[in-house]
Length: 486
Ligand SMILES: Cc1cc2nc3c(=O)[nH]c(=O)nc-3n(C[C@H](O)[C@H](O)[C@H](O)COP(=O)(O)OP(=O)(O)OC[C@H]3O[C@@H](n4cnc5c(N)ncnc54)[C@H](O)[C@@H]3O)c2cc1C
Image 1 (cartoon, helix red, strand yellow):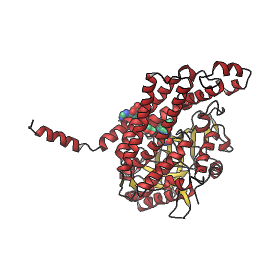
Image 2 (spheres, rainbow, N blue to C red):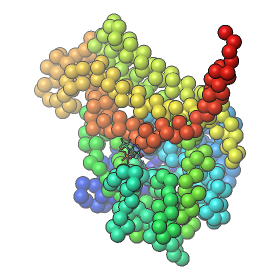
Image 3 (cartoon, protein in one colour):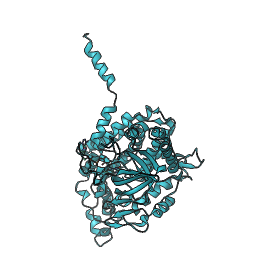
Image 4 (cartoon, helix red, strand yellow):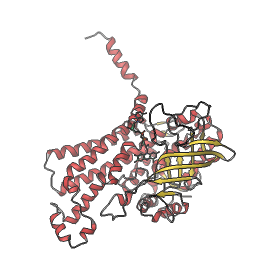
């Protein structure tokens, strides 16, 4: 089957009838018509439609080796630098449609799955069957253009380093049985963004595992199942799409990708969907040995560039509207953002320039600059939001709604809220966008997202510390210390 279009995506999500709970009620009826989801589903549908735009088709798709059909570029395993560049450009084309605000647009997990699918042989340490399962799953998702959600975090109960969950009351999802039908999972996992707006969930290892006293490894598992699998339930947070117009909530009304808690109530995962079931080596090496880090971080940084450019565009428009471009601190703040964007581009180009073929025959960007970028962005993104606040000042709260502009107040509002360039309504439209980017519930979540979505930045710093080769520098210092010459 070729890459799907928006309507095919919507029809499929509607037909699933996934068990989603929102504000104490199970969602019945079409999810694409539910107020909390319809905006993001429409936006995501536009991404799929883009795959069919005649001028972008060659960039957004490639010819499947399996069927000869044109399928999404985010599934493409790069074999050379042209493929890597094609991946970057297509990721950025999708990101432009969401202003970079859809962190979990389908290309993120398509990329992750591409790395697991191409490195599936590593799962032979678990079993040949599991390795084949992963290969087949990659092919199935790729050829049917499914949208995935994922979870790799255990519930935030007690993060103390010596905490072990009391097994009489299961909280963190664990493998409670292995039988003829498959593995049985019971308990909860966090935090499946887009849990309700995707076809399937892929469940990754939640950190390194050690065997328990009885020798079992109940938390060492990986699998994928349809979102409507019996026993699987998604519990949403409050929606930040308040059903307002695109004038009132320009971003929240379009790109509110819901976060969900995932509950597995004795869910049976059929054997053909199991990738890991108790093998510690496979569990603990999956991320490092598969190419997951370089490729997912490549996708992330490509998207972050587009998102940052959009914020820079907002900032410049605010500056022009209220005519503050003469002030030096404004230049300094905008320079700070430009430095951030150019640094992100540098990380990407450096990773592509130093790309190498990995052990699975996939041309992989250099992980060092990309891991550095994952340390850098959680620090600069909150600062970008702060800079919007420092530029916009009271304009960010002098933002009457569309209803106000449709009332008899309009002449007053157009007069008193005008800017140096626009009448009140146009100025407020821009300032509402700035507010939604950095201050609304939607905007605040974006900040939290950029801080944590790829993992805890503190522990990711340890990852970079451990991976980055510093021996050559230490050798240089040693040489210097040995030398007595002036
Ligand atoms: C908006 C948003 C969307 C997300 N989407 C997804 C998703 O789609 N799929 C998914 O699987 N996950 C998702 N996540 C979860 C994300 O992966 C986690 O937030 C991240 O891994 C951190 O884990 P945690 O939130 O449980 O924080 P915790 O691990 O509980 O950390 C809380 C605090 O304790 C500190 N801490 C805890 N343990 C340690 C330690 N061992 N050493 C040092 N400090 C420690 C942390 O530094 C932090 O300050 C999302 C998160 C957010 C905020």
